[in-house]
Image 1 (tube, helix red, strand yellow):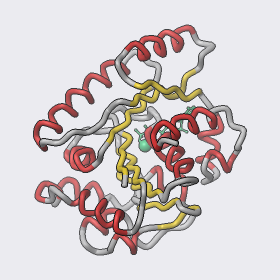
Image 2: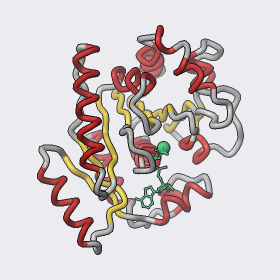
Image 3: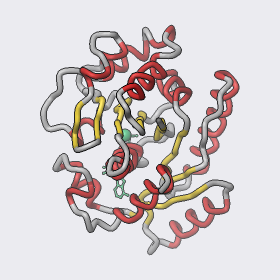
Length: 246
Ligand SMILES: Nc1ncnc2c1ncn2[C@@H]1O[C@H](COP(=O)(O)OP(=O)(O)OP(=O)(O)O)[C@@H](O)[C@H]1O
Ligand SMILES: [Mg+2]
């Protein structure tokens, strides 16, 4: 089973949009679970139209099992949600989490025993203990960035944090892929940012600016179901292929 988190401490760069859309395309081949690990609950609000009984915090607090909290949102695509309004995940992160080193690895083990092939975490824009615990339980982290002046700084910060996590936890986490999101190649500045990022020793993918992404979120539909011909769809499919192979 593969476990990947989409994370960077910067807000609004597309972590939720990219992670959930990749999960959607991956589920066409692999049994996939999105774990909404952002207390804002954006991934859940996007995909769910009625309030489920349990959320991620309930699993962490042992009030529900993984199986009880899993929601099948599409064929082969499942979600462990977070409700933005309860604050339960933030509370857990600020209190109990410090003593729970393996809580996310335990969830991953349970998902593996339920025959999942791929688990994708959507993280909040932060690099606190919650994110460190999740990142350290995953095999790979993928960072979305936008073509903007502070993106290079954001990348440097996450690289440094990742080095510390790998040293502290004595593990290795892949961080090869960068996703430059919201690219408009008719802007000279975006062409320059894309070229600059392509010079870094990383696999760089880009996703165009696409209004269909926010429209699909308004209508609680995966991007592809909102509009299979949306301009960002081929780029998401390419990124998914690079992530899952085949
Ligand atoms: N390629 C894109 N083109 C146009 N709009 C986009 C694109 N990607 C994301 N958006 C929009 O940008 C906004 C921020 O995206 P998203 O919520 O995915 O970012 P995020 O990094 O998860 O934010 P947060 O840090 O708050 O969790 C949303 O309104 C989303 O619809
Ligand atoms: Mg988000």
